[in-house]
Image: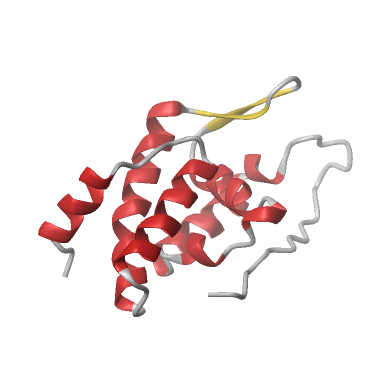
Length: 132
């Protein structure tokens, strides 16, 4: 999993003075919702260092923009999305032949990038009750 993915979004705004972030346009967010429904494991492949994971999360999770703090996610919604991704990503990584310790680490790193910690108890639960 050495390669990463990033997005270049070209969007013509109807109003050149519209200062909204791309994640605030409903049609762009809808495209990302569809992308996530089709490829729910995609966050693993994003270029996290370039901020693609945070941008991807901003497209899926309700948030507000703060001049001081930047993107401020709805905490409950973010927690639900992260838990959903933990189940999907961890299982997908193991299906790809990634060892259990590495799959746990990658999934934990993904959650940590968005401000959440995942304990071994959750991974044990997923292992005991696989999705497939």
